[in-house]
Image (cartoon, rainbow, N blue to C red):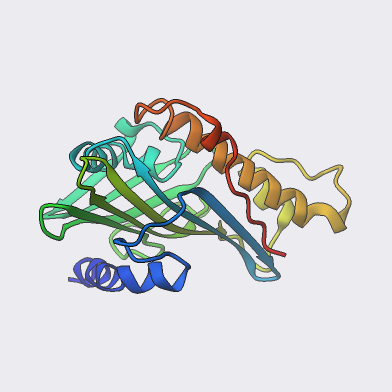
Length: 237
């Protein structure tokens, strides 16, 4: 019941969330945003917001199948797909996997078809689950993600993606060095006043690199053209 409530609430808020975070209506013509990454850092933690709004050459069916069958790649998680433990209930799934850096992924997601020409996936990391308690040495991130796909008249797909990912949950105040280490960055030799900037830039670069190599190119049949090379960067202060 709780899982259904979570996914129903997320799908109900889909359009409001996209509007709140600067997306135009699905029916409006707009300049594509291949990937906009906004990283904020505070004493209590970090939050990475990813916005994507672009036209894909894939059909709606191909786009939906990719997320459904490769959801780890879709949310930029590096872990073997065959190591995932799935719990399925209708259109809702709960996937659990541990990454190579000790991050515990416990992701609830659901697929909603709103007519023949629109499909929305909603995904949320479940931090507290009475049925499963990860080992104390494992880390978790809060995640809330929407994939909203609409079929266009020419057969292509308008893809809108909104994603929020927190830092790993460590005890006490945010430890920038520990958080950076989880993303593959060492801040040992970095002056304290530059650590936030260095971490932001690293996260932005990492996301763009993973998107190019694992989703749009070559998995989705894209060519890495000038549009993709000129990705829009947005760093929060």
